[in-house]
Length: 216
Image 1 (spheres, rainbow, N blue to C red):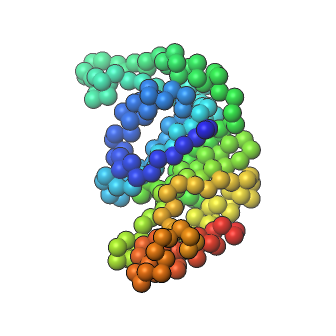
Image 2: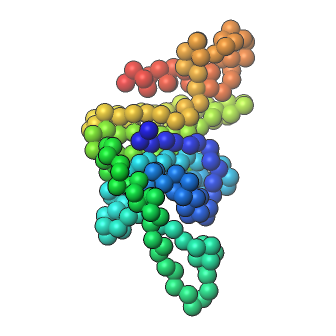
Image 3: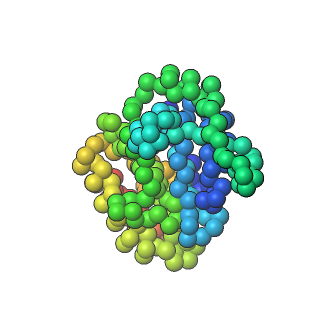
């Protein structure tokens, strides 16, 4: 695969650098690693995307250098007051993987939706490739008491559709992730149970909203 996504990693922003280092060490063929973290609540939600091929926008920001960096444990925790942080060389296996990759060109990686919406819970990352887009999301759960149902339907779903439509207007777009919904009857083993219409992910509102998303 060219890219993969993990949801609900629950990582806090201060842990991203070390987690990125470890992922690139374990999976050197995935040279782009992007975390979206919740800043509204610690240890909550979050998505992570790993992609083969270096992100061109990130490379330009680095002055043409590879965005992949590794740091020592001492650097990770600040090091000595007089020490200068040094950039470690790219591991040979990672550099080789980057050279071998001949898949679609990754141009840009962004968090959230249009105009920076939905950044605080770290639930969305968009990958812009040369010929298509890919949006990965961890859709909010409506809650046991459906206390977030109205927000999910009237805010999240609405703005997610707007974001997808804007992406689709420019390039074919793939939508995936943990969508937190059982769309069709066949997706629910006990569809006739009385509690189903009142349960998160299986309410008529959520199932209909996802149907609208797929039709658009």
